[in-house]
Length: 616
Ligand SMILES: *[C@@H]1O[C@H](CO)[C@@H](O)[C@H](O)[C@H]1NC(C)=O
Ligand SMILES: *[C@@H]1O[C@H](CO)[C@@H](O)[C@H](O)[C@H]1NC(C)=O
Ligand SMILES: *[C@@H]1O[C@H](CO)[C@@H](O)[C@H](O)[C@H]1NC(C)=O
Ligand SMILES: *[C@@H]1O[C@H](CO)[C@@H](O)[C@H](O)[C@H]1NC(C)=O
Ligand SMILES: *[C@@H]1O[C@H](CO)[C@@H](O)[C@H](O)[C@H]1NC(C)=O
Ligand SMILES: *[C@@H]1O[C@H](CO)[C@@H](O)[C@H](O)[C@H]1NC(C)=O
Image 1 (cartoon, rainbow, N blue to C red):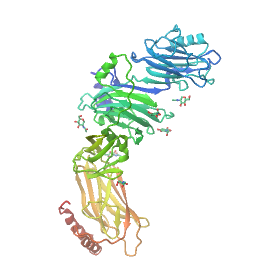
Image 2 (cartoon, rainbow, N blue to C red; image 1 turned 30 degrees about the vertical axis):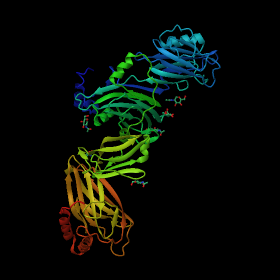
Image 3 (cartoon, rainbow, N blue to C red; image 1 turned 135 degrees about the horizontal axis):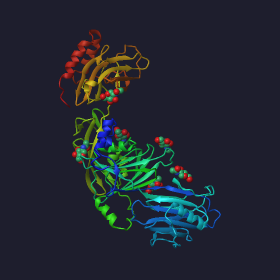
Image 4 (cartoon, rainbow, N blue to C red; image 1 turned 90 degrees about the vertical axis):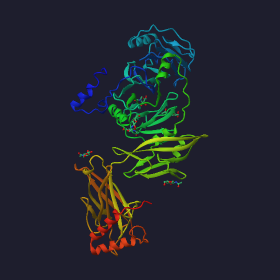
């Protein structure tokens, strides 16, 4: 489909009523035909076609046939290494390697290996080249040539775009009598290979606003596959500017063991990610091509630089290219330099993976476990602040901790339940002092929050409820779409062995000693209800150890949000606090309220709670 017709598709799909987030955004994944955005290779023992047989058991040779096909002309010599199997090198082995127009280096631990090949053998080859087979191009002709020449075939494997092949010698009496090639053949018994992946797809947002690009690896695995861990080694061009996101999709019980080489890239993985022995939990990612593309757009990418869907494997190497290096690669025929040992993870990269932030509807909390920072050698963090550098993390021997209200410390509330800020980290790495800024977005959960306070200032929440003493309950929730839609249904106080007490119903106070102090009020899409109540237990009554406060809020369409707050119940007398009206006065009024009725107290408290307070 040409670029001119592409925009018609989303329109058609929209008319057909089928939502398609990727296409609706004007990004239609196509095979990459021009310059390659990445070089991706992975190890596998499954070959596109192959077979093994026991037909060579009673002949003089074991015979392995490799037929190599290329999607693109190869510029790197193919490395073939031959290792003896259980039978050592006792029977004279034969390798038939069909690889026209290709360079190959064959390294054999069995010196008497006989090679038939049409490839150009490079100087590293350790054995003599035998006569070139009068090879025909088709699979059938190749196999019948080997069969008639040697009387049997031990294994046959077709390989597509291999970088290296490890061939293990040995024959298996339990293999079928004839070598009849099958698709997607499991050749684990004989070989392991690393193949280039040449079906990389990509697309670009038509009205691109950001320059952020995503690379996506989608690991397809059969439920039966025994593989549970994949080593991903990632390398990037020198001096590349990081505005890229790497999305790794796999089964949830998969572990991505990551090593980075000069890469400065944000990583999102489903399953677990492991960096230098540190295991981080992953996140839930969609399992479809469209879903993953939509996820990348959601993360502000405008381009899918590469999308690779590959079978389950234990090792992947991904090299992100820039146009210069793409040119270099096609101009030169020398093999790439041997991989350098993985360079270190960058501090901001680590923080983006640790995601040490957590938001509620009114607070932002940062908790960094110091031992997690050991993933970076010689890293010594001096100081962590938010965007507003007056908001500094406290530290102890094991943690860095910071808690701030969402209204402070430079936090910005962006629509749809997200709070933005930056971690500013002063660190020394080796002897160099640096300052690293990591911008982040913290999701405000769409749930009802319940908090219990000891005073009408609603300042420091607690989880203790004192009997016969006023307590202050706050229910709150972010609901930006239509705040009026959200209603508080009811709140109960439930204690074991006692009748549940209904405190609030339909947003109104219910029962003696309960008063509405505020509610609901809403600001920036956050809705707040506040109540005062007293948990009255008559003198001599049994006092439970614990209780739960349970509230429900709901939408017009009967969606219910329920929250339970566990509290411990206390029956102690505390000396009055001198702030505000004074607790003695408050208690006097409360006890009085049993006689006079709740209205008077409610009135007094309304006046008090609306009097502006001087912040501490
Ligand atoms: C391939 O066969 C081997 C045994 O020969 C087995 O252990 C392995 O699980 C198989 N692999 C796949 C992908 O089926
Ligand atoms: C998206 O990217 C653009 C340009 O890179 C940037 O200006 C914008 O702030 C980003 N938006 C978010 C939500 O990150
Ligand atoms: C991993 O999860 C899949 C289902 O997603 C399950 O079939 C498989 O048994 C699990 N493997 C292990 C090793 O737990
Ligand atoms: C991954 O790499 C590490 C070290 O490089 C190695 O010890 C481990 O065996 C590899 N795992 C797999 C599944 O290949
Ligand atoms: C540091 O503070 C955290 C959070 O309050 C706490 O869980 C941890 O036990 C503290 N560590 C030490 C060594 O005191
Ligand atoms: C009710 O409305 C909310 C938002 O308007 C929506 O997210 C939810 O799916 C709806 N629930 C039902 C059962 O329709």
